[in-house]
Length: 416
Image (cartoon, rainbow, N blue to C red; front, side):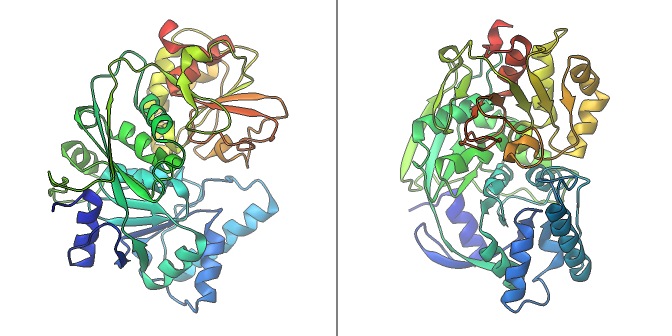
């Protein structure tokens, strides 16, 4: 019987054939901590008797959730982590680079066949690089920091094949919202979603990142795209990697197979208060909005900002809407700056912030008051996610967000 991509990765890293369902102790190729989860992971490391991390070159540290520090507690946590990084010889990206998941990808810190863990649920985004990447708790991360390995039950895989070409102003975010609606919020619990088909083969890395990022919204342990020419072209100049074959075997065993065709896919909007409650944009068009957030690790890349700018064109954002735009990293910010997008957004009435998580986690700024409505390109719309538990958050693509920000209500981007 053949193997899935995930089974091949674990077999390679464990130096023996491994099948889904087995419990293995696997070596870790990269461990990421940030300013929210990092302090607890470090304290657990010390409580376990840790003195030196397993390999400082494999520990990835940066701050992105509360930056610059927005409270004394946040400042204390970041100072604590800076001291730890200095003592351990860990390179700390600090507040300079942007959102952890984007930085890991653009710095080439995740590569095909690796096992990467992060103390954040959206670590699964690195599956776009062909790595097995998953989020873990701070206690497990303390163990990883000390031992450089972790127990896993190797997950079964769901195969998702996508065909067809996206129509105008429809893209990967709409696709993954529709898939989440189909599979459900817990339909892939502790399973890996293996993405494939002609649509993914022609999709750029930014779209693959968006889809893998939101695998966790279906309960998945990981989302992964088998590495191909697109993967290796992205890694070129970021990291020396020898191309190899990590394709699933033709007779690989999956717990489920799903087929989708994007040819007639409409822009999607996830309504409060769950990600899997996605509907075609026309079903919710006309709903008044108070805030639009374009950014996050899901949709804060240059391609996302360019898509929003294309929809915006020479229009202005509505005076009734607060528009917050945040590039995902310093590199993405500079791309947008050089292309003139930042000036265009500010001229149109938006607030453009420095790279960080921003309103996505509802902790630093851009919070919603009771009764307010946000339209966001981020990955979660849980009750209270962006502020008041009496507020509502809708999720969408950058194109839909920009179109809606022009009119002050949810709008089909194809009509702008």
